[in-house]
Length: 318
Image (tube, rainbow, N blue to C red; front, side, top):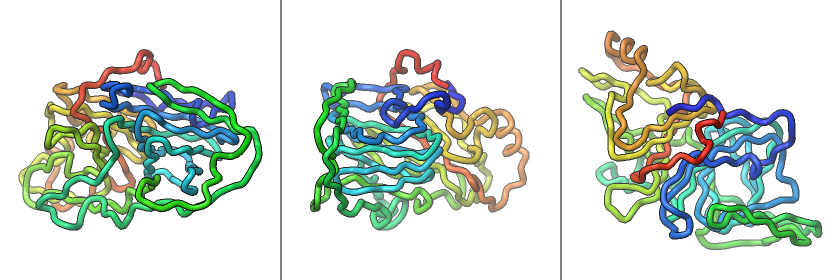
């Protein structure tokens, strides 16, 4: 299933919360097991509104427009090709300066962590040193402020007479953070054949079954392709994971036509999928040598061991 770029509102003012739409999900926030995929399209700041998620953690992927995020722990500027994580219970607001669009991965079970590097060793993929947390910032402002709670999949609102961003200082390791995807250290085959997509995992929320995940966040960044005697793009396959792919910028090398920045594609569990016909023909007849692939491109994948259910009306999202 494929979506064209999701429409950004232009005829009315829509902030980040009002522009949030659920595409698919699995499990249940009430039982604290599962995950959901959302998209947001907005054009206005949240102003004197704040939100917190009582159901789980948000991983936010801007595609168009920078996000100025204020949290109880401080402020973050998150640009396209960066991501941020806002954990359960943290109050935040998102301000934008124009048409904005992006993707959100939500997990209920646990928090996102770095994948186990195993034989890779101490360095590679997303290195801990490149994750940034905000420095403390606060405002002492008396005003009418709406607090929106996401609880059991529904939104509730309450009003208070002061800004929620009045935390003077904080310590500990439960804090929101951001990461620049350009800092990802790619590990790939330098001889023949393919490494599986988990080799491109930035963050994961593990399941109780070893080797599988409630959700992986995987990227396909610029990298060198040098494998010999190999069809280098992702070959035709089916697997035990459900995949939701988005495109932040550029053209994805396996699907250059039809899969556009700001759109998405869904590969359900055990459903065959692979490159388009032009990609197959081009790479089948290409003389192989060291090639830099995906330059100017950033595709990503939300991957899960669970079986997704599309939200009613998700097929009509544009």
